[in-house]
Image 1: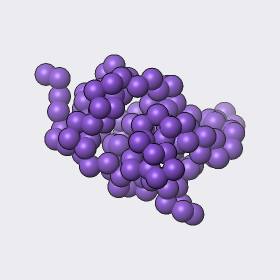
Image 2 (image 1 turned 120 degrees about the horizontal axis):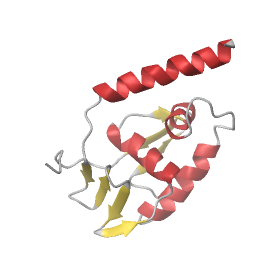
Image 3 (image 1 turned 180 degrees about the vertical axis):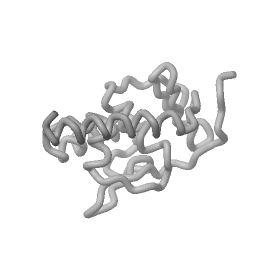
Image 4 (image 1 turned 90 degrees about the vertical axis):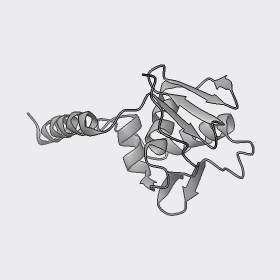
Length: 135
């Protein structure tokens, strides 16, 4: 293997191990149920209305909401959304954020959920409700 492929394989293994340890919740709810993500269905809703998200938009939103308030760099988000093998520009994430804001923010120019941390990246600013499961 080339060193680059070896690194990609090791990262993939670490990612699988980490995801096995992370608690997986079926439904994530924020701001008293206003924003909800159904992980099993890969579906999001805002104010009770289902909103269409592309697979990458859903992955991005899910990455941000897993740890509300945590600041992610563009590179970290690219790795979570596109994978470590992605060789494009990290500014691609800005386009996904812009599109996601258009869909989930009341005023995309004054976002409440997906916040920019200038010079660093993005974080999720919504307030998490209780942790719910479909059991």
